[in-house]
Image 1 (cartoon, rainbow, N blue to C red):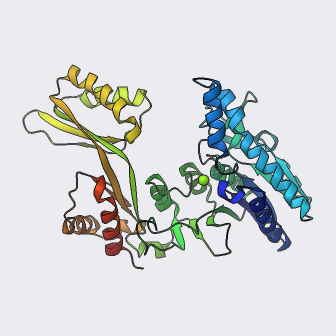
Image 2: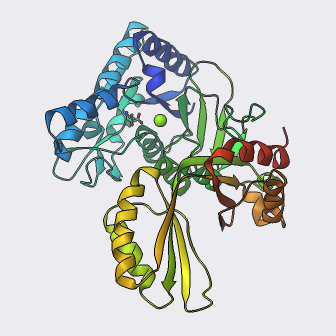
Length: 403
Ligand code: ASP
Ligand code: MG
């Protein structure tokens, strides 16, 4: 008998029919003799609808009230799922974040979990009921409702699995698992049977949007095995687990891409201490996340500095940099909005030589120009013209991934 956490995303609980279907699946797991804790998202589209309502009610919605509003989406599905379970003869109880007691900090809209009290859930499942928890929400030290950021139900589920010491955290979604690349771009992409936490972290942050990044960080820290699978069939999905020696045999596990990138270059920046801090300080204070940064070695006492930001932040970043560039005596600024990042990821890169050279070779054979390069132990990313994204992803997949 195992303790299983099952999380169902918005498309899996999009309407009553699907909620009934989900209830059937939960009932089956329970009949197989397992204790089940369920975490649900809001119905597909509901969180967006509520966020829009908040913006209609106030030009700049107060964050505390906004969280009180958007968290209701999950309250609805938690109660409906419990009701659907009752209808199938399965005892079930719904719990909101504060009832479980999922305690977070007070960063409304992007709160972090600080403590999970699992006692009430354990008592419920020990008594034979299914506990159905509203995902995405918690409560801060003051008793205010908080939310965990978009996609946060994944993190609710993993945090509960960690606190309950569950045997597995199953994440049910509308895809069959984690793929070697986006199947819409690479029809030959295949489902990964197993992927290491670190690979998943890179793939998640690189735009493979199956899991909220924070949930993977949590899983890694507490060694929670995650099983990502479809709620629409019974296929085995992808296991996200600790690194295994077999994973090192494969140099590249996946090819990811991210079109949400724009590039800014500050030209002929005087090469002296404090200049980079002066440039990036205002950008950081504006809450803009800088991704890649490249600075050239200087020849004549000046250097070019190039970096990327999310496309939606381009204008703001450019305006900020223009201000600082004048102050530090840089020559000018150039930018490009339509760039994309393409990356290959794999823990095997630690032990395989020559992966980068091969990647550059493959791209050059297609005439794709590399504008920026960055690497980590298990990842190589390049910035290229956005119009070559699909070609780059497909060719790299053909070159590196056995299908
Ligand atoms: N309902 C929330 C969202 O749409 C949380 C989640 O689904 O994970 O972001
Ligand atoms: Mg999600």
